[in-house]
Image 1 (cartoon, rainbow, N blue to C red):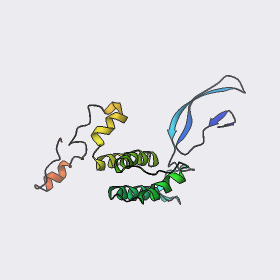
Image 2 (cartoon, rainbow, N blue to C red):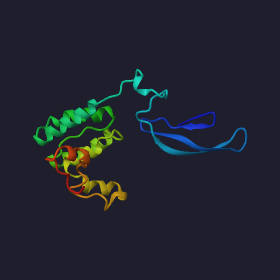
Image 3 (cartoon, rainbow, N blue to C red):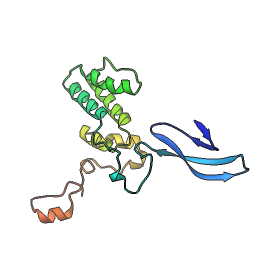
Image 4 (cartoon, rainbow, N blue to C red):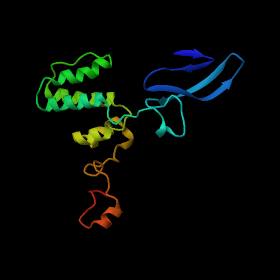
Length: 175
């Protein structure tokens, strides 16, 4: 934490605090309220034309590839899975994994992908792919309890315009 001209800045990869309200009491004291803010992909110099900057926006991360490969190796009961997941963990400064059962590794993979790929927009797709979206999401987010329906929210609705164009299409269940 750095105090710089009466402004406190928290430097980390994921969480930065930005001031909401500042009330000046004297020339040397200020009260500032902060709120959490995700700053994982913010450009250092904001502009109105971010698509034409020299900043490369990723499509897929190497850590994502390593975790997917470790997941496949786990399903094949191949112990090389530890080589790939531990590369990701080592980069993050975490202790290596070893000697987990196939089911325990799978359960850990659910968490590992959530931690590593936080705020990247892939979590829902992982949960749907694993078949646990409607059971796990209410545990993590109580606001959706009762609103997520099995055999409905795993799929997106097919746009009515596409159904009108192609009479062979039928709407996904629940829509």
